[in-house]
Image (spheres, rainbow, N blue to C red):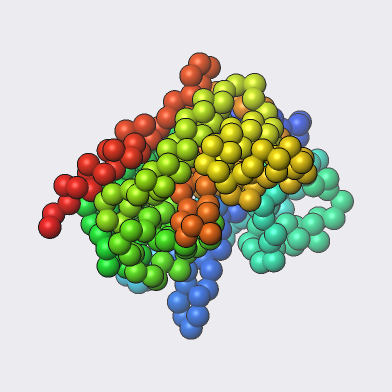
Amino acid sequence: MRYTLNHAELFTANRQRLKTLLPPNALVLLLSNDVYPRSADGHYPFRQDPDLFYLTGIDQEDTYLLLYPDCPREDLREVLFLRRTSETIAIWEGPRLTQSEACARSGIKTIKWNDEFDSIVNIVMCYAEQVFLNLNEHDRLVNEVPYRSLRFARALQDRFPLHQYRRLAPLMHQLRSIKMPQELELIKKAIAITEKAFRRVLQFIRPGVMEYEIEAEITHEFLRNGASGHAYQPIIASGKNACILHYINNNQPCRDGELVLMDFGAEYANYVADLSRTVPVNGRFTPRQREVYDAVLRVMRQAKNLLRPGTNLHEYNTKLVGQIMEEELLKLGLLKTEEVKNQDPENPAYKKYFMHGTSHYLGLDVHDVGSRFATIQPGMVFTCEPGIYIPEEGFGIRLENNILVTEDEPVDLMAGIPIEAEEIEALMAARPS
């Protein structure tokens, strides 16, 4: 790990908040993510299951968590299972957490080796009436991979078919959508690293550089500041590539007169940032580019002001921001009044140039868990990312900041990151020759 984390009180509080949502005599079992094979004897980099991390702070493979608040055996009410380490593992892979280290990090007093997990599960299943298991649930996900928690759920149901099994995901989504103060500090750290990377590339971008060279500059700044890397595959889209919403090839030259749309964010201690900026490759917007840029910025300012308690997130994404965008597209001459008047309400005219949502949850995942039909509450963190994409003119513009919902005004966590066109141009004018 590249980060220092002394937040046992956070993970203890998270577990306590979960326990208050459980029915009587309920058992909760969570597992770490797989270490996914890549090819030959190689593996993809390990990333912890975010729910397990949220409840324990443990960022290590082969980790299990058992929560059973009403267990008749007090020593089995909260148990963390770790991979048993050895001299051989230490030599080949490096040290793993000791039981005392895991106790200090998680706040869990009972720490056992994971080769004891099956026998202890056998004991507690004799007492528990309901079993909460955790699967990866997201309404934007169609999963075809039999991942570890899914395999475990199937095996446990085969082994103990008469128990009542329930979904843990809705409870975790409810908890994780409201960020605790310590979580906000980690998100702010990821944002601070992201800001450094953006300021760096403003000094680097110029006609002739490759999109992947910009990505490399961002990666360099992330790693030198302690981030684990990118929170998601970065989008570095110059010219017409910006009209491809999830463009990740990043393999084209940036040409004089074009814009380059960058969508990237650092990951720090498993918490993430998500930034989008669009800048002129040569350091100066053309009049048309500036006209569209300012329109997107006006939409963003109005949209983030709507992220307030009581707002319905689905209506915000589908109607409220759409009306603001519609007005801007009419001013830009991209939509005609008659076209708007006769539009299909299910497929509004503005979708031709702004086809994605404006805001999504942010936290341990870049598209963090939480209901899109929920009422917005204080403590939630959202992106705000309007865009206008004009294939016929060969460019697209997206601007994105991360917003904290409070009891009062929304707080823009990225307010210090340059976004005004004049500031962008001034910073790029100071590039070394």
